[in-house]
Image 1: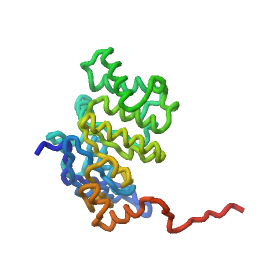
Image 2: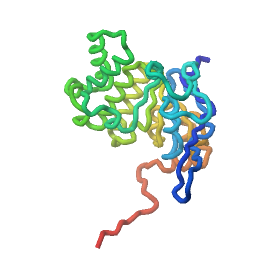
Image 3: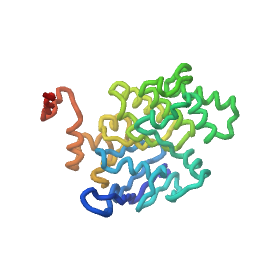
Image 4: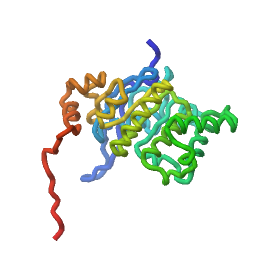
Length: 278
């Protein structure tokens, strides 16, 4: 069997939080004993509601949070947590990249699209000369479906879907082995979601990059992922092939998640009426 791109074993994260109803702090367990692995070129989803621990898992993998327990191995190398040197952060960034939910916050508002992608190349493809970098920028823009006019624009001049395409192109500039997508389509309307998901599927097929897809949306997961791990209150409640989980869910929590997906003719059970002010 080929070595997994990512292997997480017994991941745990506990936060010390201040109580609202009493003095002092208490432990809040956000992630509790979560394990999963992603093969080269594979695509795994971490699924659950807000607060289930899925984004915390992603942040531990890229080093934005330090795990309280467990191990993270990337392409066979165990990654130590804690403070990292600039050189080590850059090295890891060439292996794992992350695309966040809100591209407007993750992009520099003063930096034009072309310059944002070029900056990533200067950090992670340092052997490329200027001409080769510019050619690579054009290639990445074409890969995510952005034209010359959009390449010269600032983020505020782009739509939400276009901004997310910029964020994807910037991440791909590092030629990572693993791309983490943290609710990357959640802020987009349905038609734009479909476009971005199709784009991601094409990128995965052409480049062989592996995906860790963080989402509460099982419909989106079904379109892009092979396997899924369902989290509830920081713990794994179900895992397996996506089609198997959606068609024959075993855990009560997974069944409730699937039942919440809107379908043709779907109506909310309860209508909430907001009274107008007098």
